[in-house]
Length: 437
Image (cartoon, rainbow, N blue to C red; front, side):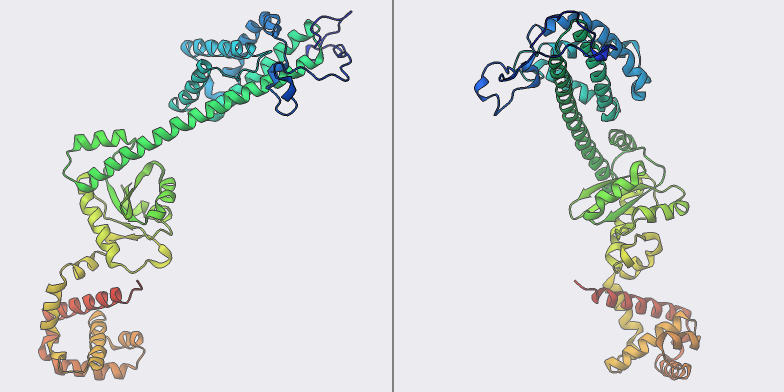
């Protein structure tokens, strides 16, 4: 390659003048790739291998100006770094840019990797540091692109001033692009590793917090410590939610900072803030839509075990919610009462429904169904008839038969309450038994 100024050289186009001198005839000759030329066509070396080794020395005088332009442009052109522009930041930026350019100019004429071990560690630390500083990777990649443009402009102008051949400038440009690509790849990988490690550690701390809240028996200072480590503000009112494992990821993304979700054994558990619960109900319905989740009653931090237990009990009692819609346990507390003591309920049913024992199974079922609806509708025949799909006169016949069997008991409020209780419990039990496995 021709590094020497030719007769009456003209400035390089990037320097603002007419085209640079034409590169001499190279027909019949291959551009050198350094050692191992025999396999160069099959496995080309890095773009800097074709650059002359003395290029670094020739371009060294231009480096300070390039460094100054970069450390001035990056904070001014990239918003994420404008607020970070402190004396310490400027010092670190200067050292980083200077080190990166020194590494770049150590490459011409070699087959070395773009980054040596020391510079790779520095670039990795830069990527990880971006995550720890709370910045997105976009900011650093933008800084790399800005730096690459400034570097190419400054160094190519230096090449032009010395009358270097165009192919030197082309290879230099390709070298800068490849070098920036490597810096970007290493930084992105380090950022992702740091992000993954942080996310993994955060999920473990959140699992510890949920376990402490659901398990109970933990003092408030310890709960606050766990909440701080889990990066979650402990609300005054919260609720435990049980939901399928498959729904955990979607709910986690929709909840954002208003709740935490962890996978626990065969189900997922969420703890959500529910202050002013009625106003938040529509929002929670959106968050848990399509999941079949059951939300426990609102409680203070030390009531989460109760909220979780109630949510689990209601989930066990409920049929599959329509279209997987979420259910609020507070709307279904009667189900827990009806199913809490099956044997006690069976004893009460045997006592109160004894007058029907003499009837056959079919007749008994008809009268039990009629009796429950008669109790629910306070003795009004028309609503009972509509629900059963029969004539009101038929309801009258059945009620008359029930009064014969139960006698004055149907006039006793306590007996009517207990009859309704056992008949409701029986309906819930039958509904559960009819669920598909």
